[in-house]
Image (cartoon, rainbow, N blue to C red; front, side, top):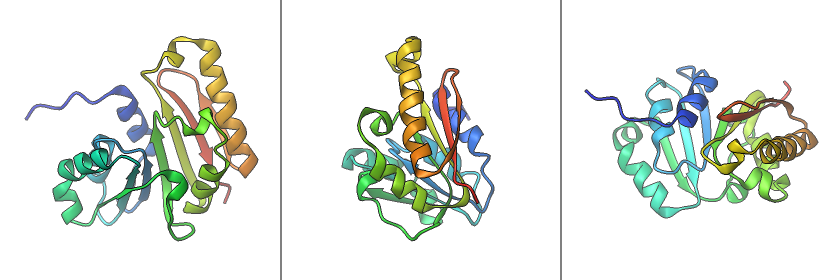
Length: 174
């Protein structure tokens, strides 16, 4: 069986997640569901909820992950992060890949939603790659600064790996 060509940014974030078989994980901006598949394959009694504002993306992710959805490991929702609702502390981990909302405008509402969605001690990974920013140190630093600032304002403990892909990690203290 041939292994599909999985982008480095997707491999990177899935490795950073260190998926436990019982994790409850949220993906913001799932696109066609490549990361969803990789994460869901590692789950036993856990679950990944993936959201995207695009109906086309959700349809593609559903098609790609049909069998995993049938086993209860995957839930897909068409919504923007600002409109996402869940019970408080529903997730152990959350991630987003190339979701620019965190640095292109005031993302206070989106970060509030993630803060409430994550359990105390929960981890958030925001990964950026494949953009011109990764080849421009000044722009890359602006991304790190903007994202770090909005996460810290809410109370996340933040660290950044400025390699390629760029990964900003926030931990909800617990």
